[in-house]
Image (spheres, rainbow, N blue to C red):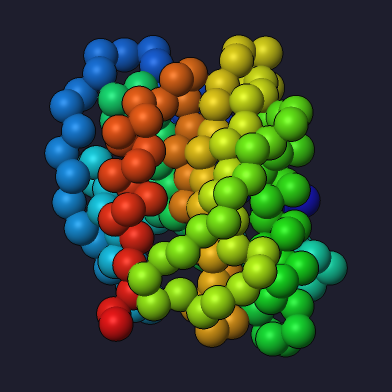
Length: 176
């Protein structure tokens, strides 16, 4: 339930992203505290941390998110206690992302992030859906793993620019 609220907060950020002027994208690299992942955001992200239930297990989830250029960019991650639950946690995150938007026919493609732990469930996703207010939205996301930490990097908006989506996903990297 708390994960739904956390994801709902991301959706609310996306809804507000198109309401004002479109600031220029000012890409900068971050290494979120407690991780070794480098991520490039086009704006300064806010950080939220909450316990969540995911794939039947409680875990603390952290999320960094910001809005720029009429899209919301977010990185969420959760540590999985049992290594055998990593794949199902990846699957649960992906299903939740699609379900929260009432998305239909998500497009999936394989994903490789430099330094990630290989996992057959690592995926890049694109899906169209609706915000809670009924507004049409698109989400582009990457789901991947490093050790027992599961990551979701997302860009959500009315029509996120493909170049910004690609830059955000390409900016994800672990040390070699």
